[in-house]
Length: 204
Image (tube, rainbow, N blue to C red; front, side):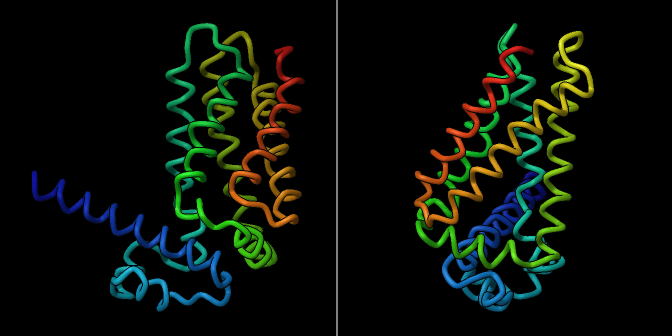
């Protein structure tokens, strides 16, 4: 059992190393310009190891989606009694998304954030995947909120609450990236947008 746990921990560490390395290279030199061979060389692992974790280079971009869902649901589950829906959603942003961006491999990307967005989001396949991932994430969070607030939310208001915040964050993030922000400026722009969106949710 101990050996199995150790192997699983090593596997997760290698997977995270590949994600961190890939995102750093994507930001530094562009998504299309970065090859799987460069990622594995920088991470000091075999190319076969990469494909043991990810079918394609594109999948690396969305590797943390499952962790985001789990962390967001945990925030909802651990909410304080009578905590307002808007406060829970803001806490999800702060604890799950903002913290991971601020502490993750892109934390020091600076102006490279714009390059990463420019090169990645112009690719139709990546855009389609991003929309699919966003939809799944919204559905999962809305479902968890609906279960947590019976009698307060219905399927429509739960979906609208999550959609309004995620839409505001996405729109503000895109507008911010066009200006070539630092990570701090990028996150601050999103937070301002969330404050605007949250005003409408206070009535729930």
